[in-house]
Structure formats: structure tokens, C-alpha cells
Image (cartoon, rainbow, N blue to C red; front, top):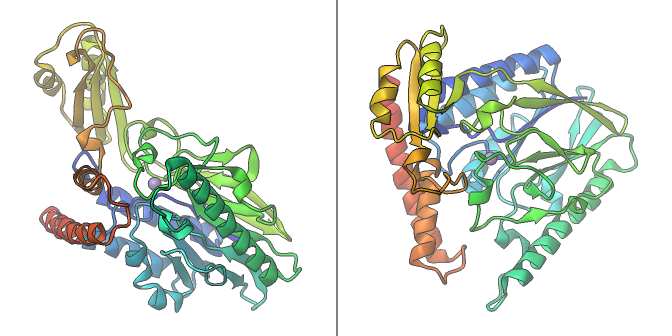
Length: 413
Ligand SMILES: [Mn+2]
């Protein structure tokens, strides 16, 4: 069986206010081409399909159009497995799950019982080909019941145990369904596996409420022949184990991520063995950080202005000189298809202080994360899944979605 593993699409993501609809459209059309040319039979999306809990309507249309085309009559792709990541709203993903299941698209938004999360995919001949444990991003409330007075250590311990139990039960169910056949078990996960590396743009360090700390690789029982992971945005294997893989995001989520390649993974099964190889995703929009002193910046901007292709750039001044009119000087060197999305001046910081890359920048946080932080400030003693907070969140999501839709309409022309 040929399977494609990908994750962290973040459909609807915008870069410093710039919408990326066209990039996402081109990525999905490239992916459809790859599915057909490689004869992919099952597509696995390991969470963070969307960038926000309630995506705008154009973004939703991209998703549904893609799913329709991927599974259309004549397509090699007979199954799609989708799980929710921490950015996705489980309820939003689950809402059309019944309808999508009629197209062999299996969606797991909310965490469910092991029996519900585990199922068998059949080949064209009706024979079982793959057992899937579709485990979504697990939230605190999926893993343990909060008791008053639980301290952080106890909480971490309960979460780790809860996570282990969840995967152990899923694995037991999977072995039952495999029933001794020579077919592999593929599990999914959207989590931060210990030993993994983050990229600066994946927002992993921003996860506080309802998030998980690092997870030891031993949560995945040995009967899992492949674990399709999402959450970390840099492609990597965990603890050198070929079966534990992150593909990372196919599109860079920021200028940090633009400096390395992006992939999806192509899996081939043979008996219980799963071999995988990387397929590089082309860049659909060139992003570049222009960094250095004023001379270096101006020289590079002139080069990029002369380029044939569209370039989105971030300028970071790290020179020794004070440059109070940085923005004006940058603009003097911008022409052609070059656009500046962001200008930062490390030199404006007080003497002796370096620009702190860990420092949160309002522009870097999504609106939902900003709201989440305001909630935490306003109600420091409430648990993350407090009912009243949930109502506030849901009202905020509706308001944010309305604003997004209005934005999409005005950008559409
Ligand atoms: Mn992500």
C-alpha cells in the first residue's frame, strides 16, 4: 500500500497580515498531482489542518474542494485520515465527519474510545491492508480529571500516564483488528515528542493552556509499525527511530522556517514493514530574511528588487550604527516584485541588550493566542476548561470568524 503522510498545513495562515490563499491553493494542487503520479492510496494528515479554530469560508472551501478532488472517481486515493491538532477545533473538524465518512474520509477531531479511534483500511480487492489508530491532539481533559490542589508535577505525571494509557489501549484494539495478519499498524499523534527540535515559528513554546509537555517516545507501543506525527514544524525522526516521524509543515510558517526545506513523506508497506522516503515540497512563495548592517541590507534589497520572481522579505538590522530612519531607507531600495512584510531593528534595544529571539512579538501570535493570554490574565485561577471560559472562547471564535470572512471578501476581488 502507498501512503502519504503530511501535517501542519495551517490553512488560513497569514504572514504578518499577508494572506497566503494563493500559496495554499498551489500547494494543494501540487499535492493532488503527487497523489496521482505516485498512485497514493491513503492520505494521512496528522493535525493542524487549519491555522485557527474557525477558518474563514474561502479557507474552508479550499479544504473541502481538495478532499473532493483527492477522493474523486478515478483517483488512486481510496482513504483519507485526518486528525485534529492543537490549532484545530475538534468540534469544527468533527461536524462534517458523518458526511465525509461516506467518501472514505475518516476524521477524528475529539479524542474518542480506542474502538472508535481504531479501524481497518481495505484494499481495492476488499482485503484488509492497514490498521489505523487515529489519535488526535490530546487535551488535558482527555487525559485526566483535574482535582483541586493538583500541583504541576502531579498534573504532568497524570498527563504522561493518561497519554501512555490512551496509546496502549489503542494499540491493544489495533492488534485485535490486525488479528495476526501481515499488515502494518499506523498510529497518528499531534504532540511534542521528547528529543524533538522546534523551529521558532511552530508556536510550540506558546502552548500553555490545554497543551502537553514533552512526551517520551515510549508512549508508542512497539506494535506500531509507523507513527505519523504532527506538531513540530521541522521534518525529523524521533530518537533515531525510523518509525517515529514528523514531516513538519509543507509551507514555512515564518521567516525562520523559510531557511530549510519542506517535505511530505511517501510510505510503502510490505507485509508489516513500512518504508518511508521524503518528497520535497516546492516553495510556492519565496521568503527571505535580509539581515546585517545597512550596507549589506541595501545591497541585498537591490538584488532582490531585480529578481524576476515575487519575494516577501523581512529586514533585520543588526549593524552597530543607529539607524533611526530604517523604514525609509529600506523603502528606497524596494522595487519590482519585492515586498517587505516586516522590519526589525535590533539596534534600537537598550545598550548591551541583544534582541531576544524568545521575546513574543504581538505580530507573531495569532488572534486566538492573544485572546487566550488575556483570558489567563483575567481569570488566573480558573482551570483551562472552565465552562464560562469555554463560552467566552466560543463567542470570540465566532467574532473572529466573522472578521476573517469580511477580510476574505474584500481580498477576493
Ligand atoms: Mn502546527
